[in-house]
Length: 113
Ligand SMILES: [Zn+2]
Image (cartoon, rainbow, N blue to C red):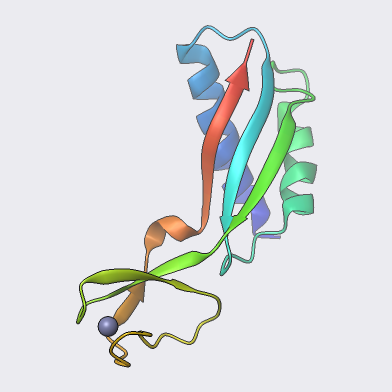
């Protein structure tokens, strides 16, 4: 269950944001999940419910958005979308690519009261 550490991280980020903005309640959190990410939304929801108990984030709605992961080709100096771990650049056919680190699991937006 590797969702626990990422959910904890996400939760502390959400709480920090709420504190900085003097929120009384957190209504929803939009999350982006890359297509190569192995994060399971149901597990994130499960852990979030536990972590947010008796906090202003209790009952906040989690909105998950799937997004295609991106890789970067060193040869073409361009980003391209990837759907699996077939790391060959669609443009030049070379394998000089690496996966963008920001394609995993990120908080996109938070709505508060
Ligand atoms: Zn290329």
